[in-house]
Image (cartoon, rainbow, N blue to C red; front, side):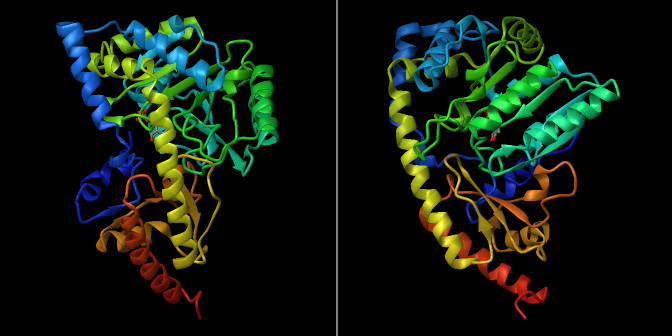
Length: 393
Ligand SMILES: Cc1ncc(COP(=O)(O)O)c(C=O)c1O
């Protein structure tokens, strides 16, 4: 098992002096505190002790219905509430899926780079992780096909393909429609399930209507994983798996042995939050806030660290930044931490030794002023490092 750098930095990043671009934390101003308070009061008055009781492993039935309604309303995705498992965050969803699918040494395929929290789970199950490169349109489907053909010629078959098609973490890339159907076709041809991890798809603020991969899924091949962490609150630890009933059944058994059920009160709260329609207003608010913060960070970065290059993501919480190749983001981080600025060095998202000059910057958590101040400090350090490495000479 490997510890997550983001979790390890938690002590440093929770120091109020530190300006953290590291975690995937929503902005504290984004939480709908007043609405959540009145919903909490209302559900306690209405349901009393039931709110404090154990719940079913599958999840609070009204929440499963409301998640189904949310997916239909947002994506036009029809999915039977019976085939939804409520999880303790999408992190648990990924963990349960590995419990169900993986034996030590089993093959899994991921994009390179990818979400480090998923990599750490795959590693803890002793998975053999194979990666497929991606570009600004997402996963390279020819490379995926080559990889699968090569494995098949050796009699090997991956247990699943793990992908983040919408607003990828860390790259911010959204897979094009063509690549999505390519991914689905290839997975179908080789008979491999696809785990679609989608914590950011609902906070897309570039105005594009992008449908999840699950929408293409005629044969129950796609396992959709959703989360309320970035839209409502990560502290409520609520996510879900929407998949075929046999997979849901097995994940439910795995969950019985993991935490028996997700927190009952959180499920009641989120269920009401969806049913009242508050979630749709909340998602619009969050999009507005993060679009503004993204633009503030992008502009400050262009001005202060002009040698940094990056694409503007269509949503989500992060900028994925390339520094000149002479710079090493791990070394930079040490210096930045001395000045109380934190970020995640890009190498943590790779399974090989890639991404040494890359870094992931979170813009949702810090205030506008702190985004600015943090980048001022980073820019000074980057300048000094560039001068030291001879790039500026
Ligand atoms: C791609 C991805 N998947 C899953 C998670 C886990 O989120 P949670 O467990 O809070 O739902 C995250 C969190 O940042 C993420 O970025």
